[in-house]
Image (tube, rainbow, N blue to C red; front, side, top):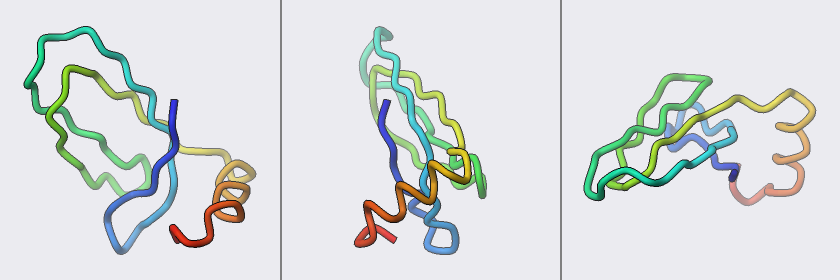
Length: 69
């Protein structure tokens, strides 16, 4: 599990990414922002499940990562 910000400059909201490996390598997968729907395509052997943070988690993330806003 990790947290990342949406790469869409109009969104930039953080969300949780869970990565599950085990597939054959070299597949294109999308990480889709749960807030704005922006898709980031990555080449990987993993599958990604993405979840929005609770308002409290998002506020805590933003406070602890102000440079990433």
